[in-house]
Structure formats: C-alpha cells, structure tokens
Image 1 (cartoon, rainbow, N blue to C red):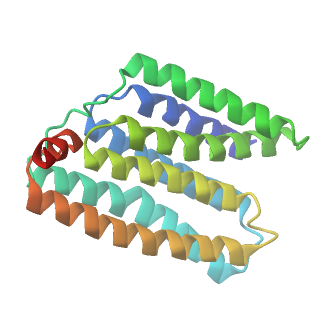
Image 2 (cartoon, rainbow, N blue to C red):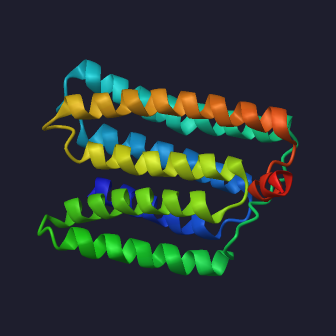
Amino acid sequence: MMTTLLTIIFIITLFYSAISGRLFTLINLLMIQGFLLFGVALIELNEMNIINFIFILLETLIFKAMVVPYYLKRTIRQNNIKREVEPYISGFNSLIIVSVLIILSFMLTFSLNESFQKIVYFTAAFSAIITGLFLMISRKKIITHIIGYVILENGIVLLAFSVGNEMPMIVNAGILLDILVSVLLFGFFLSRIRYISKDFEITKLSKLKD
C-alpha cells in the first residue's frame, strides 16, 4: 500500500515537471523523486542481500536525492544560467502531452494483467522514461536536457526495482551503470556549459552554425 502511494506521488511529480517554468523547481522535483525511490527501495527490496540492499539505499538517497540536485543547482549558480526553463512547447500543451503519455503507459501495463500494485509500478516507470525523453526534446537549454535524462534514469531504476527481489544482480548492474553514465554525461555537458556560454541554448548553436 505504501509503495503504491509513493509511486502515485512519483507520477504526480511528472505532471508537475511538465508545467514547471523554473529550473530550480525541476531540480527540486528530481530531489523528491530521489527520496521516493529511496522509500520504494526501503519497502520493496528488504528481502535482498543486506550488502546489495544497503548499496541501493545509499545510491538512491545520497546520489539521486542529494548529490545530483546539489551539483545541478551549483552549476546554474556558478554559470549565471537564467532560471527559466524556456520550452519549445508551452506548459499547458506539455501537460496535455505528458498526460496522454501517462495514460498510454497505464493502458499498456493494464493489458499485462498484473496486480494493481504492479500496474502502478510499471505505469510510473514507463511514464518517467517517456516524460524524460519528452523534456529532452521539448526544452531549449542543455541543462534541462540533463534534467530530462535524470528523470528517464529514475524511470529505469523504478522499473528495475519491480524485479529487485527476484533478480538483485540486475538492480545492482543497472545502478552501477546509472552512476557511470551519469558521471560521464554530467562531466561532458556541464563542462561544455562552462566553456561555451553563460546562457547556453540550443538555438544559439544554430545561429553560430549559420
């Protein structure tokens, strides 16, 4: 019951991310998602090997809920990046699109004839993956693309949690890969932000190209 409640709150954060016009609000949503993933792992994965269990709890609590949001906020402050999201698609239209994507995810998982808890689980996971992709292609700033990627990753982690007790090695491998890819991408994109511009936007790249 508690897991279902946490995953429903996770889905609500996706709706909010679609209409959010401020970068810090999006980052705060990432922090909330990190705490929610920690809560889900704490409740659902307690049958795992204790070492794996502690590793997953630390990864979700420290890396996802603390380190990533802190690092993103620090990058924005240090580079004086404008705090507005500046989307290609308005917040209202984004909300409609994300709502449709979540409904489609629900219909897809409902057809699997799983329990209600699993349906909510899979719906939240698939919705986060698709919403993350949507944010990456519908926002101008590269820092927003990174936020969209982290949301996508959170969906993959949530999907891995659904089979965590049966296949703990998959969860561990997924989380290690998650950390590795995150560090590489963060290092690459954030270094580009520092070197290229204080207000780095995709549209400005096009102008430079012309």
